[in-house]
Image (cartoon, rainbow, N blue to C red; front, side, top):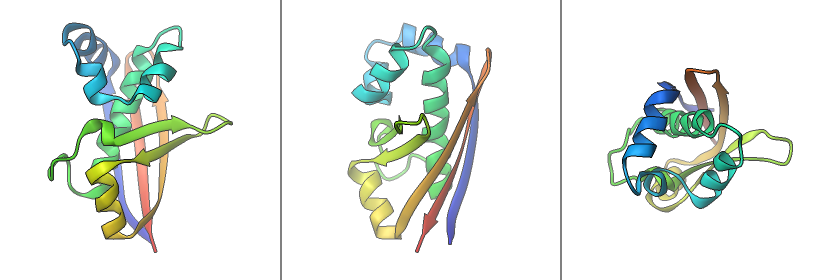
Length: 125
């Protein structure tokens, strides 16, 4: 059964500018694994932007937004061995998902030169 659906779109330049301008922001928004993945790319900005959009879409699908003391780095977007993006949760976000019976999260990322977007679908039993 579908628990929620979320989507988000963001300008890549906006993410690039904020990350370049604000010291420590990258570590606040992204996990070490996400940072390593994005920085391994020739142009990291679209990858950071897509992951940021996925985190926003995930919390929209939860129906909570960032209420409840959730942290950006408690939602991690990783790729499986074939490149498919997946969501991993930690801390309060993970606890909330367990409490609500959420069993699966499906995420789709897209980016072009100027924009990045994500769609997340959450399922529960």
